[in-house]
Picture 1 (cartoon, one colour):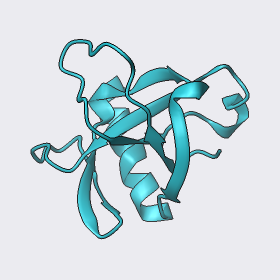
Picture 2 (cartoon, rainbow, N blue to C red; picture 1 turned 45 degrees about the vertical axis):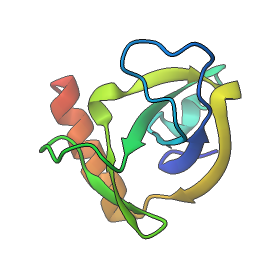
Picture 3 (spheres, rainbow, N blue to C red; picture 1 turned 120 degrees about the vertical axis):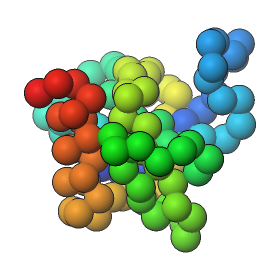
Length: 105
């Protein structure tokens, strides 16, 4: 696992709040040096989320998908499924800019 990798996000049992129930993907946004920890910071994705300045668009298997950086969360490594790809350098740069905006850095 590396920063910028897109992983399948397993749906937790018992839906909480407005979490989606269907298949979902997430971008690993945690620093590579911290990936050995038991939890991983990820930003979920959505193909149906409306465009916002802080929601970068990426291509995920030929489909425009938004990275919901405002929903960045720590998940157990057990919730992360297989890799479905990795962001290119430009996509990761745009995600980083969105994280700076959302976190007020």
